[in-house]
Length: 541
Image 1 (spheres, rainbow, N blue to C red):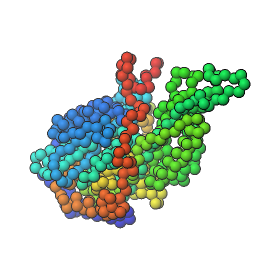
Image 2 (image 1 turned 180 degrees about the vertical axis):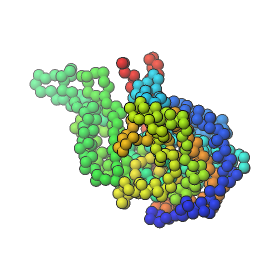
Image 3 (image 1 turned 120 degrees about the horizontal axis):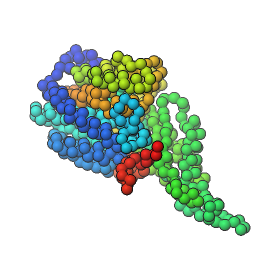
């Protein structure tokens, strides 16, 4: 059942009649069909808010209100994070969890139109939904509400948990919830994400994401310069010390040089940076007193992640000495790597088979053709890829992944869903948004095109409805079929050496009292005497 062993195939599950639709499951599927308009409106609302990481105030409030209106008990501010929440419904075992994400991405503002245009009143550097997380959260919400309908109508026992997980783009909240113990009572978890494919992950899972902020503060700049003879201290030519801005520049360049020597050039690891604070901007004769730079890296193993931090920390300490600054280090996040559970994958993909792939109609295709026309391309009869309109068996999807990875590699990229996987049997599943078909090999569409389709109901709703049905049906299976859930549990215990605390279990990497960095200078909308605007004001034309 582990890495090189095959669990029972989905095909065998089909032969055994596992795909028969129970009355309870049909109730969940019917609920999604009956509530498509409500689901679509809610998704469009969250898409329109387009709030970035740690600043999803309106989005989180909208989820909490809707869930409370539907009978859920909602706890706001979980894990010390203002835009996080936990909504619970039902009672007793099993406890089944999933989550909503709703953070947008700075620099991707786009209206739901077939040409490049930022949202009204904002420049292109404002936030927008890309994956889109607006639809990720709405899909999970639809699945949980569908399962709730089955609980109510058929008297099912069990507890549904829907977490509000902010700041996924910095993998910020799930490791915190895990460290604080929120996941320890779970019997199973469903981890959904929009994609260009319709499938679920098998053995190959996603890797680790670590992020840290280095703060450089020049506390006593007057001690830097020692005048000789008649030279004066102070003024515009007063021997100003290097200070915090130089520290940021040195950290940036030093890390670019040492990046070549951090790890071998293989296994799909990445390292990126973001300058959060770089001086005060309005007084050129004073040394910049504070600078902050954030680093984020993705690796297929925890050992590789630790090696990168070792180099970064060494760079930062030396830079601080050079620039006459004090260094402080603040962790943003530390995730584990994903733990597979083939039994959960089989149950979930069986429901993919029942639901089928998303189907994109004439209005969606017209929108896709308009984008192609506006890009100077010949519009296609079907502008969407064949892949986004069919199912892919997990084993076949994994073969494609394997062809791009090192032979030893079992993880790629990064996503903080991985922290759910170490606390209960979990599945990583996808349904496909509409993806434009390239006119030739190697052609890449501009990002705005995908972002526009993420806000156009006809090119995103079918993905949401299909995903909501798969999630709802899978939750119903887990509520009504203890034999299948026990199989998932046995595999989890085997892989962890006994479950939570077992001999092969990896505990949360953040401390139990970890405080999420919600107080840092993250991109956001601000309200001043000028009105509400993005933190980078709209440039004058």
